[in-house]
Image (cartoon, rainbow, N blue to C red; front, side, top):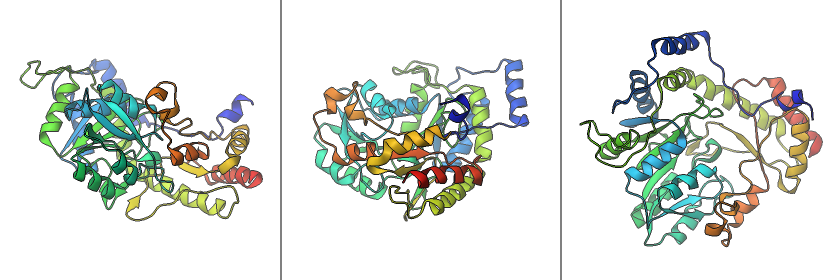
Length: 371
């Protein structure tokens, strides 16, 4: 496989204009890279206000990654040693890592076959007296069934922490993901719909949880300049806030273009024997972070052909977390039949806003040829 083929059609692409590059240059020249202030730097604070408005919550707290957002939120909610947190296994490792690092135990829940998100019925079956929270993951940008999850959580008195790392711009019943649970967590990693390289945010309507999260992200230092609790350095620097703000200004355009690309690609792939395309049903609205198809037993063969054709298709996620070496002792003996089935069938295709119709046709051509 030659180097050119590897990068012809990339899974993600981020571009910045001259204006934001000048702003970043000014920050470097001024030396105002970050601050130890409880409230964060001026650019961080401005981004937080815009994010809160966009998500539809009272509070947004910027941090240095989506993983940091998850960890700080768990600590803020008092989740720790002796507790269990229910999570899907079909997700990125960070979801489980944040739970484990908090001192609590991840309990792996199977997923719904149609949505690839946590199955509320399996969640209800696996809750114990030690279970204190559930983390629904809006996988590939498609919202989990938040109505059913909240019903189970309310019944068992569980906290709901939305892992909305992949779902900025997605909504459930008209509500942006990250605004439906007790807290929500977003990632601004390099591949996300909104990217600043590394970064993340916590969202909540609860002023007490918001205050705790701000303290935790700043070494445990309160706004009274006293160390009131144990914390970490999870702050977002000013350059990342500037890049994220620029991307946020273009978010609606990104989402519209991704939706258009998804519609075109679905039309191109309609009726193919080995290709099950992703859908979208009310009350869920997709941000089309990834366009994830199911290829059944032909997955690995078709994936190889896509890659050899210069298309950066990726598998998210195989193996699922409960079968990885890090977590096999916790979850390896359990059977998550739908999770394990999907992990052997799914492939995510590029769908980002910089793709041309010709790029979409190239992906379609490979899938038509191989199916």
